[in-house]
Amino acid sequence: MKRALICLLALCLLGASALAEPVDLDLTALSGTVVYSQVYNMTQDPAAFEGMVVKLKGNLSYFKDPDTGKEYFAAVIADAAACCAQGIEFVWAGEHAFPDDYPPLDTEVTVVGTFGTYEEYGYTYLQLTDAEVTWEGV
Image 1 (cartoon, rainbow, N blue to C red):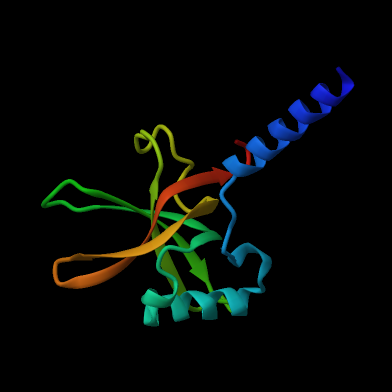
Image 2: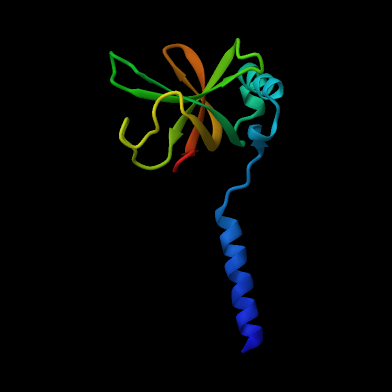
């Protein structure tokens, strides 16, 4: 009986750890200058990061295209001197309505998602898809 209980507990722990997707690139653990530099690298060579699970912190930004009605959300990351900023767009997994389900604009959010790119209007954009989004107070 004791052996069966230990095996069951081990299987539960293995199952729980398999649910959490590992992060390939954790930008939250880096200094402001290094984070900004890494995001710049991502904009210059996005193919090198394609498919990676990325975790980052930035201020929530929002834009709604007046022609299409499409909504865009991004985490904007400033450099250490706060003079320059880079944003990475994200698509929050599941159904979420703006503004009801989101924090106020400019709130610092933590985003974890799969890095990729897409083409729109003749430009290439960076995006974290299937993202998890959290912020203080949630």
